[in-house]
View 1 (cartoon, helix red, strand yellow):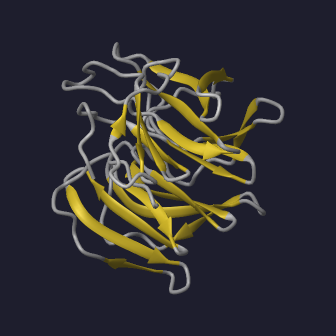
View 2 (tube, rainbow, N blue to C red; view 1 turned 60 degrees about the horizontal axis):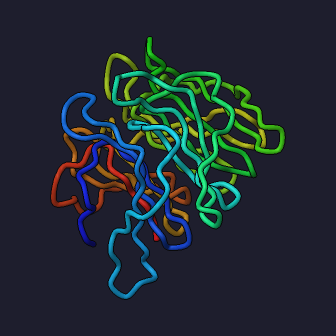
Length: 254
């Protein structure tokens, strides 16, 4: 895979029809220069290259979260280059090549996760400017409102999350005192959080994806390890390490 045109710390990415959109992030330094630019790698091309000729987000963001819903790219929260935390959200229509602001979340969030399920967006955990949080909320594009759902059992900042069947998995993170190996899942039918067996390692700033019904988790602060969880066996197993440590990476299944 070719290198991007600029180095980006704490960006976010989605896979839209085999086109990888890499958004935002920042340069060197604690806050650095924060970007609202977007680049795209079209995996449908025989020799894909990063294309920077895409509209920029309405706001500069890093340590934010993104996901796809109803053919739109959604971005939520994060921090700008001045260290200001945000609750703002925006969506991108790839067909119209246009970004639009949508309603803010109820809480400012960085180092959180955003997933989509059953036509709704779900924002989970993160840091709210005062402490790591266990709060979660969902957005309904039909009425344009964010509403809280039951909080997670653990505060989780720097967590990762995936949707598998009718459940949202919240994986790892930091609870204000330690890195976590614990995992919990939110059942969309019963609207309750349930414990899942813990990972083999504590992970803060790892990222996960689902491949063929199996949850894969990669890296984290100080980690180049990989492990996977199979709901059929209810167990985590180690896999082959990556070649380097990766914290807050972007991981996509294609």
